[in-house]
Length: 395
Image (tube, rainbow, N blue to C red; front, side):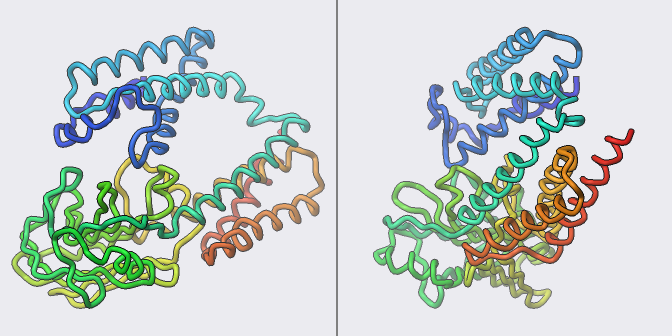
């Protein structure tokens, strides 16, 4: 029942503001849009609890899969015929059915995951370790800036369909010291090099209240309507986002926010800036409450953020969420490694090697590094995973 309620909330709510975007998505599309891979993975995850619930109720696997496929088809039909702003597609039907199937399989085999035999654990532990290392490498590459060498168009507080509109008045917009015009840029290659070399995008504005969504102050898109950079107001926060390699993987690119920049600033001048310099996301603001800034080094441990199905920008919580993400992986590896029957000293050495690879060696390939919190949480999670597995074995 919980799975059905969650599915209904995620798929049946109208979104009139997305009508124009939906019209651009063909119904036969399999991996659609800039965030196509995110949509695929989220659609799979959305129906996994349904498949698991049906399996735990005793429904046969084929019947559970058929019910999941029928429900997905009904939702896609409703989206196509009656629900405004929802994009029905063949991709959703396929991925939802795959999610139901995986959920049913996992529920049927839950004992093998919690109480694996030695032979099963010898597959699970190294497989999970390799998957973690692979996603660390993928994330390390995905978070780095990657700007196409195309024709760029400047936007000054523009009214763009996928964004909210800035309600105040934009006084100035620049890249470095050069003016950012609101039309086709004649020096696109130079602007691209400036952004990659760390030049800041700056906007001076007089806000007129809070926004509901992301409202660009200064932005750049290219002639293929691809987002290059956005400096924006988001409710009362300042947001900065520069196109990253994640978009090439159809994942969500990293963004940074500075909380409370636009709080009680109506009619007062705010100067905002953002950029990527020396592998660090930088965001700054100067307004009625004084000068504020945040610097966030790019991290190979941001894999969790690439998969989010909603707009997100790194706030103060990002470091601890990344540490928790690392901990979950190390907990799983350690839990299953203990079930292999390996001696504690040897197992500890292997876990230490894994930590060095995932938190030091692989990030260093991209000039990135793990934080102290990620290292500490990784060690603690590995110890807890080992102890829990040992306790369950003894029981």
